[in-house]
Each structure stands twice: as structure tokens, then as C-alpha cells.
Length: 182
Image 1 (cartoon, rainbow, N blue to C red):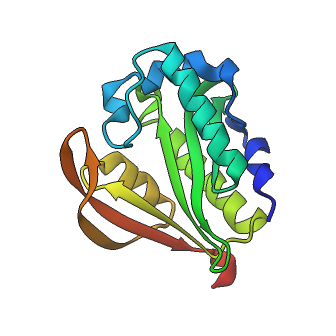
Image 2 (cartoon, helix red, strand yellow; image 1 turned 90 degrees about the horizontal axis):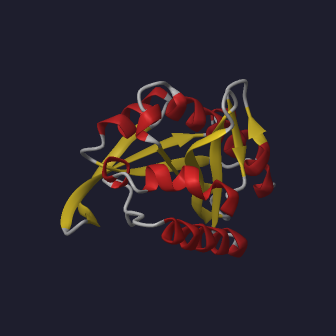
Image 3 (tube, one colour; image 1 turned 180 degrees about the vertical axis):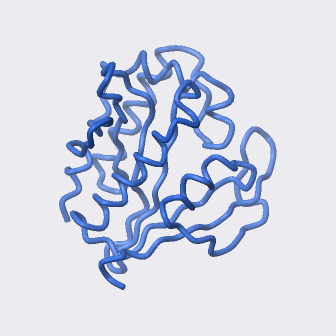
């Protein structure tokens, strides 16, 4: 399974590249936004130093092999507009979980949908995964739309699954089987 391919995936509008410290200012801009942070469970970044520390933690997780992260870069301005991730790999069943987050400035413009499409293609064609799944905070309607536009089916709900900012949230479970396996 070629997990490094996530850092070299692209289409005509977007590039996936390895997260690095040179991207910290762009990442800080959206990771310090309460609206972006609301449903992801990552801590709100209050300083650029905290963003550098988060980048270090993400890179350590990736080096251990359980998580893959990529920055999503807009070709037109070479700006990091978000991140995508594959994690919780089940190597025996060939499953993984998907995740993503984007700068609020780029919400509603199709970049989330395009990014997930690229991530799915990578996971299914290159990594030969059988199934991808996602757990989304039930109130996160935008994320649910992105997943459903990309062919993910709602498979269930977990009550009070997420605990974010001192509040419980239900999780909607979604999944997609590799169309090449059907």
C-alpha cells in the first residue's frame, strides 16, 4: 500500500502536499477560527507557536503510520486552504477513516467536495482500500453534504459520541465501498 502518494496527489485546481512548518501561517489562519474548529475536535490555535506544535504532533502520528495528513493547496495562489487525512487504518479489512477541514474563506466553493473526491480516488485506486468511513458531528451539515455528494451512505448514528468544548454531540456514521470492488 503506497501511503506516501497522499503527498503528491493533485488535480487541475488543488494539490495535496506533506504538512510542514512553512505552512504554519496559512494553517494558523483557519485553525484559529472558532467556526472552523467547532466540529473537528482539534484545539483552537491561539498562537503561531501552538500551530507549530500541532504540526509536530501530526507529523509524529504520520511517522508512526497510523495517520496520513496532507495540506490542500489552491494552485491559483499557492495557499494552504485546508487539510485532508486518512487514519485508523485496518490493514486486515482494508478500511480507513477520512477527515478534512477547510478555511472558512473557501467554504461552499466545492473545494471540500473536490478534495474528498481526490482522497477517495487515492484510497481506492492507489492504496486498494475496500472501504472508507467517516464520523461527522450531526450538526455539521456542510460536511454531511460533502460526503453524500461523494457517494457516502449514512450507516448509523452514535448518541453523545463527540465531546467538544464541554458539550456532547451525536455522530453520524457514513461509509463508502470501493466501487472497483462492487
